[in-house]
Image (cartoon, rainbow, N blue to C red; front, side):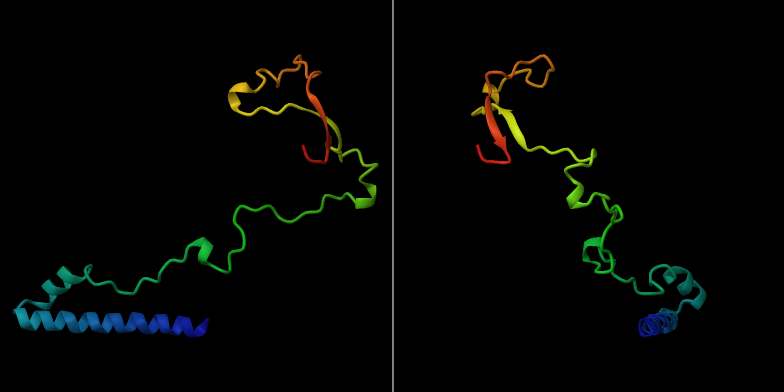
Length: 127
């Protein structure tokens, strides 16, 4: 960390020195006063080199952005069968396969839709 700070300060010092030599050279060569040259070139030459900005996905010190902190669900595997917060999806489910969106059953999401004609499948499993 100290070495990079020292190198950065060295770069800034060299840039200032080079800028001053450049201003002196232009003022002597063109016959302009140093004040005119300073006013003209002050913003044209940066005082320090810009460090390239790393993207978040290229920075190894960033391991997550907008992530929730790790937390436990407080349910032991041995208690999953008796815990009321755990709902098992295993069992028999009604299933209707449609080859394309146009032949799907319309309104299947409504509460009063009858799925009595649909097949039963075992979950987990394959269809």
